Amino acid sequence: MSSGEKAKAKTEQAQGKAEETLGRAVGNERMAAEGQAKKSKGDARESKEKAKDAFKH
Image: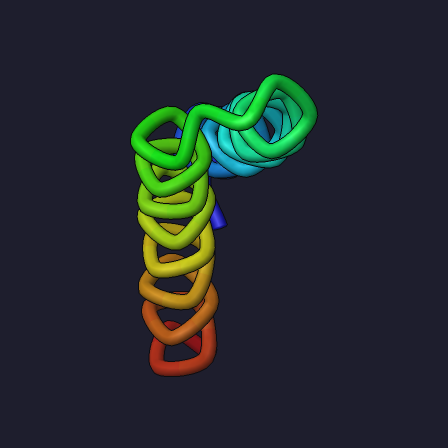
């Protein structure tokens, strides 16, 4: 996995988790949903990069 893409995936996952947690804490369902979506996007990016790495070797 390229280090840039790996870092981007981890950043998206962390930001999404924080946004989701904050949204739930303040009762803002839209913010929680957006955070969950961002976290899922990071998960997908990480999975894509891992699949690329698996086929390189």
